[in-house]
Image (tube, rainbow, N blue to C red):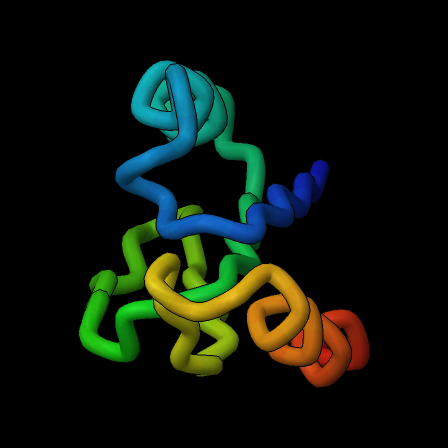
Length: 80
């Protein structure tokens, strides 16, 4: 079985063309893991037949300073 992993620092709904990629993976029986940073702490995705979601739950706000947001990336980098 072929396997693909998509990694994103934003939620899947913000990834351009992800629906097209996931549709192709499903049609071709390719297992896909989607690892993403759930900054809002409230995004839920249901695993599908060939698609599994792995959220990293680290709350961060765009209203915070760049330096403070940077420190949220450190534990996210070690996730997985």
